[in-house]
Length: 280
Image (tube, rainbow, N blue to C red; front, side):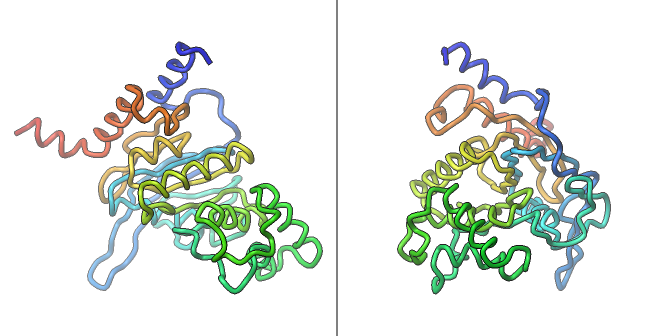
């Protein structure tokens, strides 16, 4: 790619996504989410709207307490909106389902007493969706897609962090979900390991083009991981912006376009504080 073409490609990150997208997979319209604590009724999000298209790397970005994880739980079917609607492939989300699979933090959800293959088989057996030889064939196929066929009989403690992530994704993808839900999966990792995990995830996406919703509070991670970024305001979460972030990688972190997009997102996140500073 010529330098001028690369700069043009990266400049698209400053625009709302206007190119013809793939079909809409998930529609979230006017969603307000609330939950109770012993002392309060908390409004986590307020009238949030967005669409997730097939093969999106859709990142939800915002400060702590803005409802990012609550939104992911609602998409997963673990809580219902008090206002608005959430539809996947046109069907109202009314509870958990195999079309939405969660990949948890740090990938330590793998059962240590089961082999890699047994871990991938487990949700299929529990759900009853796939059985016997069909389940085994799907599990082996999923492991092949993430380049772990040779490790089918290995136990999790023998795997690197990146390999554990691939097993977790293979386990989810063996269920043939429409979307993977990832809630700050790298938040507790040191900087070097976090970078490796991001690269592992992007490498898998390059191969498989699955749809993922990824929650983070890191601006840099949002730009690196996401193809589209939904920026939420501080509590209660409202949509501040929706941006295209394609064209960036770890090698472009020091590029001026990356810095400009990072600043723009920062301004969206903290525009209330900026407004107070201007008035004062």
